[in-house]
Image (cartoon, helix red, strand yellow):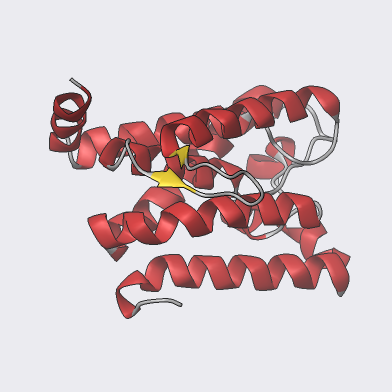
Length: 201
């Protein structure tokens, strides 16, 4: 199922699922301690929550959507760019989406958020720069879905979801995660954009 060259993605995948399930079904306190709280981030020096909040999820639907997306794109991307750059991308996506969240909510002591969606959006959009014409199959849809269509559908779904609920899922940070993925590739491998434009042109 997993290749040794995909050690970064494998570790993130397994650890995120394990901690999320443990928090959801055995110890809700794990989720509470992992939440990213912008108001308290600097005041209480809760620096680790930038990363721990990405290891927990609000419910099974939240976890499944994120891990489904991660599974289909992260391992292939790591094969292409290497484990070190992949982990750096993932961490950068988490940090970038948290910066935006902090900016929006740092005056609200009651606001708290969780989930890996910002980092996964970074992975998804970085992947598209490298392989914009790839497709995936999703049961029960009988036709292949272009990765770029899936990516924008993912963002559209998260935008819609952000308007439907007031929970702890930070849907607004998904866009900034996507932007961070595009920027990461631009900085670390600008030639990828030349290949992208050549392919699409």
